[in-house]
Length: 164
Figure 1 (cartoon, rainbow, N blue to C red):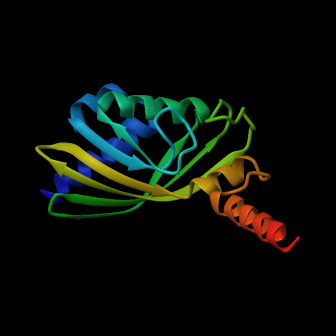
Figure 2: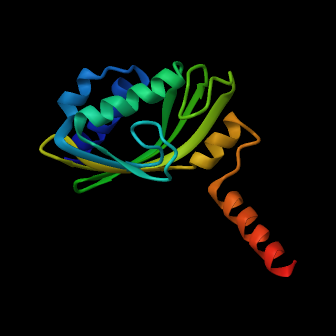
């Protein structure tokens, strides 16, 4: 079972993410699929958000493939036990389309992440994906401040106000 589950995740990375074959989503994902990951399905900048269902996943894949048409995911490591598959991956691409509020920069990115998926009945039921969205944004726009940097700046501003 773990070998079959790993093969389903390989299809996720190769066929869906790398090749953009959106029809494969209907084959390997449950109707009620839920993904918890950085970047909202609509591209908004909330820290984490849920992508709901197959249509939500199709929008998410389209968002990334439009912004990074040459995007490529590499599976660095994969471990499966029971109904869980964990994948360490790296994605890389060139920013030639609009992403979130950011117009194309022409910059190349490379970001490492981890996906933990639950597979049942030969379909991916749910997944949690974690990657450093702040690092990705810094690669795209070096002047971009992370949420932590914004929070620290705000804190220092408040301290200055109190001490003034």
